[in-house]
Amino acid sequence: MDNKTRCKWCNLKNELYIKYHDEEWCRPNFDDKYLFEMLILESFQAGLSWECILNKREDFRKAFDNFDIDKICKYNEEKIAKLLLNEKIVRNKRKINATINNSKIFKKIQKEYGSFYNYLKIFTKNRTIYETNKATSELSDNISKDLQKKGMKFVGSTIIYSYLQAIGVIYSHDRECFLYKEK
Image 1: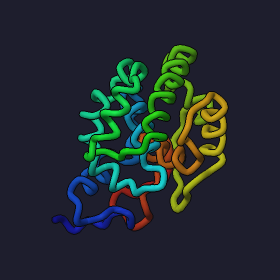
Image 2: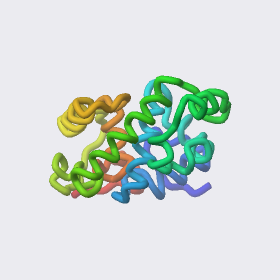
Image 3: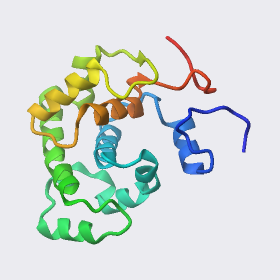
C-alpha cells in the first residue's frame, strides 16, 4: 500500500475501490458505452453504497450482457426472472425494469442528439465543474428533471450528481487527496 492520501470515502482496505478512485473516478470518459454502463450502475446504487455496486460490477457486466444496450432493450419476463435469481447482483425488480426502460430512452436520446454525451453537453456546455462536498447541484437537478420528463427512473438528482462525478463532468477529489486539482 502506498502512502498517498485519498478522498475520505475511498475504503483503503478495498483494492478495487482504490483502483476506481485513482484511475477512473472524475476522469473524463464520454464514450457512450461507458456512459450507459455508469448510468445503469449508478441507478442500481440508489439506497446502497457505491462500494457495494463496484464490488459487483463484473457480475453486473456478465448478467447484463456486457451492457449491450440493444440486448437490454429486448429483455423480456424470462430474462428478468433470471436476473432476479442472480445472487451476484442487486436483485431489485424495480431497478431491473428501470434499466430496461432507461435503455430504450438512452437509445432515443442517442438517436436524437447523435450521442448521449451530446445530450449532456446541452447542460454542461462541454465544461468540467470543479467542486467538492456536494451531493446535488443545479446541474444535476436540471439533468435529473429532464431525464425523468423523458421517462427514466432511478435518476434523481443525487444519482445524477454521482454519475457526473463518475464520468468526469464534475471533478470532486477532496482537497487532501493526491488527485485534487482546481481549474
